[in-house]
Image (cartoon, rainbow, N blue to C red; front, side):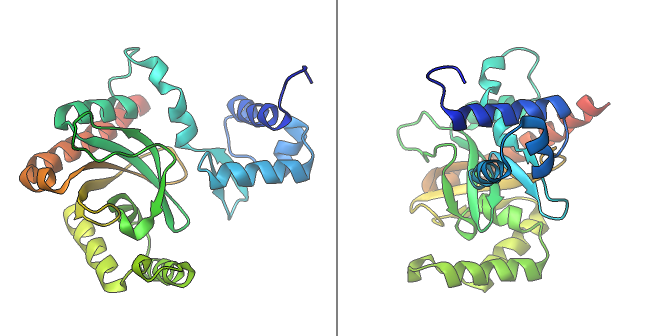
Length: 254
């Protein structure tokens, strides 16, 4: 090892380069063989990357794959290089059109993680940072992603949340959760307010056709007064962004 290198950092980069080389999901045993890291260390590294949302894990196949969060990390350097239909370009345009915070999220257990954020520049704004975690059923993004699961699974998630929380105010009511789920399934968009952050609201929808093993959702966050007054415009803007993303994926697949 070169002097000054941090072993764990070098190993993580070697793992990512391995995925870039093979371009497919890998089991721990395959990663050990290809990268040359001891199995115990490899298992610990992959579990850590999974918890932080940098890799997806397929429990049935027992394989890992870099997540969309990894894919987005360096995309800012590609601005203007034929990226008009990329997810980051869509998020930047949505932010410019609405003036509000645009967020991309995914589920990690019973938590929602914001994997990319384009924050509003307005003085009164809904501010987030990438990597931030929120209780799933207290976020519009978490609710629309949960709606993809069977009702029985959603019920189990609610019970888990209420069992694991130490604070009564963090408990969620199954009836409220399912009302949001039904609304999203019926309308294809969900508008919530004062769920995770008092005074703030979010318009959210699932992005269909993503390549990640873990579903992702797009949202616009704004102070409640601005959300109320501009609700129709925000809903239409989000729907347009979701459609643009889907069309862009069709074009790239053609």
